[in-house]
Image 1: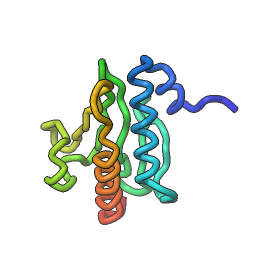
Image 2: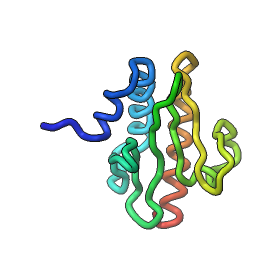
Image 3: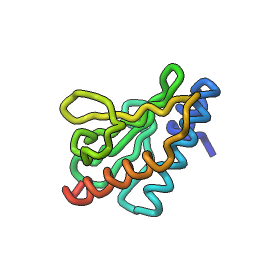
Image 4: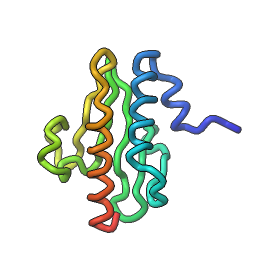
Length: 124
């Protein structure tokens, strides 16, 4: 079976970023659970999760220099309590997961859960 574009993107990262990206992927998958409305795909050549329906782009992974960015397409709409998100644009916000820092498993899972609730409440 051929490697997916999602897997290929992660495989092509430097070792440190690859390790973090795999952990981020695992944390997102745990938060998603078996939700049949969410699929793992690639968007604009980046690994992403999409919620079925209108405005379905939920989040994506982007490797960087020394960290991995977990981007939320509707991050500006997530609860204000999620103060670890960065960004100033109209909608996108991101969480930087540093390769040499503590891994924020529960933060990632909470953000993804909040994103799922947001998409479910708006029909996608």
